[in-house]
Image (tube, rainbow, N blue to C red):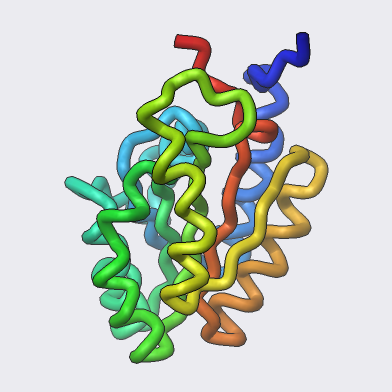
Length: 178
């Protein structure tokens, strides 16, 4: 049996690398919905006196927060779970039509190894739905690829002003065993 549960130390390492990369690239706002897949980055944002962690009631608020950050001269990232991406679809039209920079890290559920059947529909729909809304997607399966891929996504989202979602697979974040 292949074990997909990520070791805590592996998860902390790549998440720390990604968090540090985001901060070095000028990201000061972290809009998030509480989620185990983003646990480490959320904790870092909450503890960082030079960053603002914004807890969302649901994912539909993320595009507005990121637009507001851009209009105020700041950079922001959305940390969401795949099951909530459907909540933001209508608001993504504001991002694509306004050509606002948009970077989202999506912890995937409904991926390979998922044991909760309720997670399959949205987990499998995330990528095609985001692409239909004009959001470029890239998937990360391995910890050693995380920082490099997120670095490219940062450039595409902020310099290229191309809405970008980085999908953090269950192979990367591990699976929930319950």
